Length: 120
Image (cartoon, rainbow, N blue to C red; front, side, top):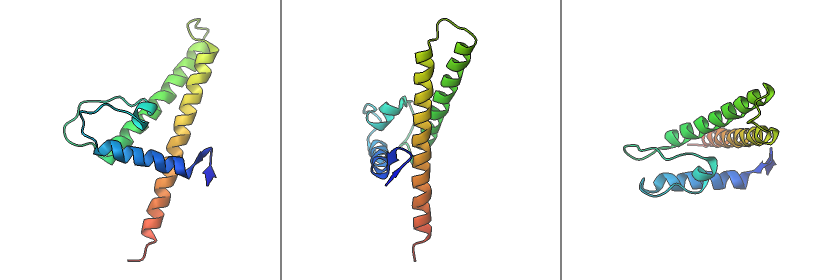
């Protein structure tokens, strides 16, 4: 199934990578999905849960959208240090990260409905 440019197998792969990274000890380097999304490792006490990973991902998406908007405004105001290609690349990164977030949300909602519809 292909929806919005990201098929369900890629979403399942992302979820598997998130689960695997949550199970790894904190001392290991960040790799895979977290590194690709630009999530930086912050020192924390205890094991990171799903809610922390989700919150960090949403904060990263929000930050990329804020940066894209800031670059766009700077370019529109005539700032010579900002090129059109930088603005377009930042906008596309923000768009892609938002689309991925929406697809993950849709997959989670679908899983929730499947669980709620199970017979007990």
